[in-house]
Image (tube, rainbow, N blue to C red; front, side, top):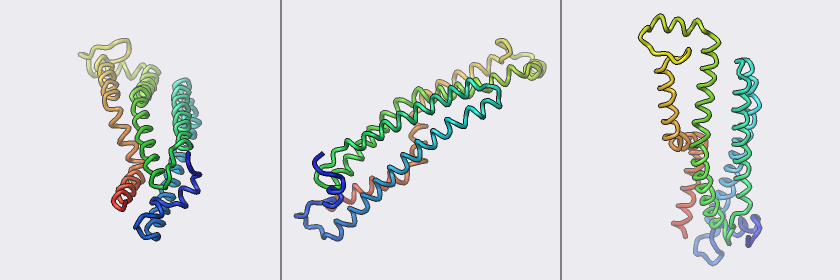
Length: 213
């Protein structure tokens, strides 16, 4: 890294020899600082929220009498938080270049790479979360044998595998496959929901800077 981050921000997003007025240079410099700081806060808040969920979910599953499933969810969430935290460390190694514009472009590329890696991970984790949810429902179903009996009486033509309707098992399998297939779309929607506004602001700021350059 050629400069400290303080020096990069002080330099601005353009070189001093640029024809852009110093006040405009300083304006985009301040926008860059605010944008990066805001994103870092959002990332940290997201990791903290995941950790809190990992601690609370086993308590909920304990009262549902499926503690082991709650511990499985908690473990997955903690692994997700660890992976996210590890990726955030990559920000420190970004190429800061000679200006804050260079750093912002480097940050944008790091962000795109991180999202691409996360999409590959959620292709496995999302279906696992779904299967755990199905297992929770199945556990509650097996604890209520009279419920299966009522369904058998109401729909005598249904085929059962043990105490479970075959159609329910087939539906669960199909939904799991759909979860695998659409996991990246679900992840993109999730990211837009949480970070959409600030990501759009990053793209707009970079586009404005490129026009001024």
